[in-house]
Length: 360
Image 1 (cartoon, rainbow, N blue to C red):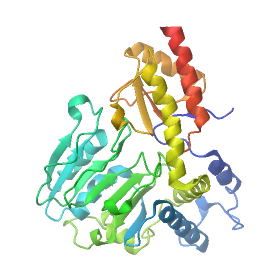
Image 2: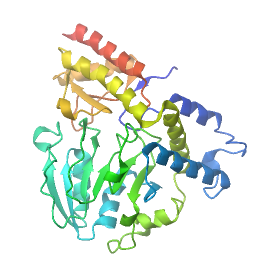
Image 3: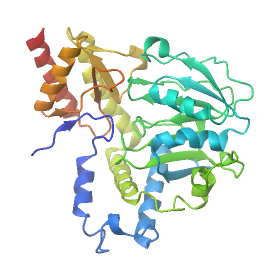
Image 4: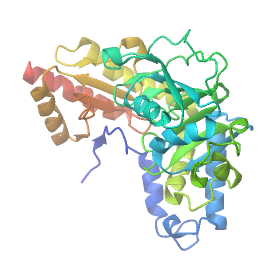
């Protein structure tokens, strides 16, 4: 069976070189005579894996020394609670609602304090990013929260909101390492790795040191306190060791590709192929306002649910997998993360052209 073009939103496509390397090391990592899956997280070999992974991530993103990098579990969804538990000193936070995940994060935060939804694009099914240049940021807000790239709806903040001096917290799960980023603009930048970096089971949190304190909300579990993990260098308990190992390999792969500038260029080139086709297609249309389009997740529809289903089915038979849209919106979605080759997007567009001719 040859490999398919996998357009899944996550768990998603990984670089083939990385998978081959991991396969070659499966039974014997670096002469240890065992797999990374089997080794102690306290071993010399694993210590080197996690230390190198962190350093490579710091190099790629230019992470300043006053930020900690944490490799955690529980996915991005656990951060929805962990963030207010650790940061809501005044019990007030401002949320910008641009999709399902920001909505869920805001709802979770309400368990811990007052949540102000200071901007939203729900009025048009999250098909755009609201203007965030002059927001009614709350005087006493502990932080302002965004989901920077919306996997389900295919929108992306091209400019960060003006938080008027308040700490910016961003979920970057689906745009992690897809382009250069100025970490200093954020207090917390975090994401599940299963979209652009590694296998499901790891969430990376990059957090400014002054936000890591013992002063957390009463009742916050030890495991949900950032300080616990920062002090123990992500080794307070057994971490998702194998997942971290794969992430480390992906960091090396991105470095070899030329870093985040090169990644951005490749991603723009891939996305352009698909968006250019959608803009002139007679059958398919994109669902997002042009200026807010994501480079990572591209939703599109034919306008006919039966035809959408037929497209997904025939695409699968043609080796183009996981193109069904999220269950909450229907239609199709092509996730074209870093590891999706240019050829994959070209193959998708060729198939769409053929389908359009046959179903006009």
